[in-house]
Amino acid sequence: MQKKIIPLVIGVLFAFLATYMIKAYFQQQRKLFKEEAQEEAKKAMFAFQQNQVEVFAAITNISAGTIITSRMIDKGLLPRQQAHPQAVRFFGEIEGKQAARIIRAGDQIIPDMLKEKEGKERKKGAVTLSMLVPPGKRAIAVSVDNISLLAGMINPGDRVDVIGTITPPKETKQNEINATLFQNVLIIAVGEELIGMTEVSAKGTRGASSLVTLVLSPKDAGILSFIAERGKIRLSLRSQLDEDKEIYSSVTWDDILQFFESKGTLTISPSRKPGKEVEVYRGLNKETIELR
Image (cartoon, rainbow, N blue to C red; front, side):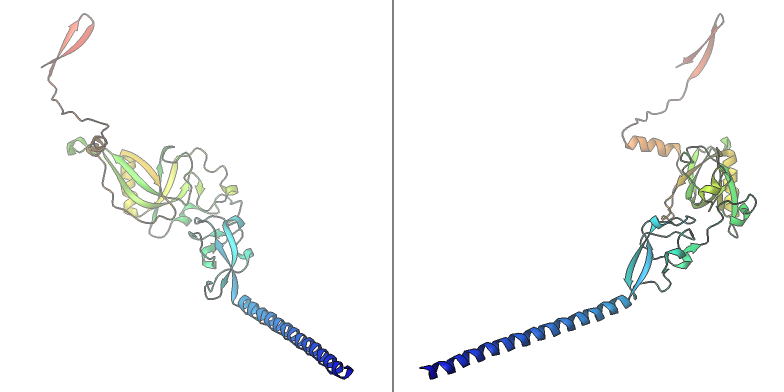
């Protein structure tokens, strides 16, 4: 009986030993596989990071001349092939500089979009108005009321449409004309505040002035001067992103009357020719009677 038990015990021991060795082998293989997987993940992450570049992009629309702050831009990673070759890599290259042109939300910041900030305390006479006028253009100042200035909200660097109202001479038998004269016109100064001035340097330069300096071609400047002397000028503020020009027709009294009539707010009665009038004096009182 003992002879039969001994081989059975030995067989069970070998079975346990084989099971243990197989388990140990799989544990070792699992550990090796995990280490290899971690190593491959590290290599993949390293390769991914090597292919990523840090860029700065605008998170809001930035007008030309605006001093750029950290609130206007954000930092992120992009695949190297999607990043602009000249994209700025360090925030120090951006902070405190001025936008050289309009920067739209989402645009990657590149050096061409930036210019050095002008001195905080600009000395009077250091920069003249003529230095801001582009070649071939003319600066012309027009006087506008507080309504046209949008209660002081129009600033140098904004763009506007210029609307003119003029009454032709009586001999032309023309009605009063109201029309958009020029579109997308740059304002380079409001009062004495010039385009590109910081809040510190611009403080106190505008005051209560109603003078706005526009940039126009020589011919357009002459037309604006003519209408300003004989009529009224209004400014219509445009979006910095709106560069389109549309065709507008002039607006006359007939257009206004037709507009109200189409809205049902005005009934136009046929005109009646006035009759002859007779002046009657009763003592010191004068009375005019119309003869029908």
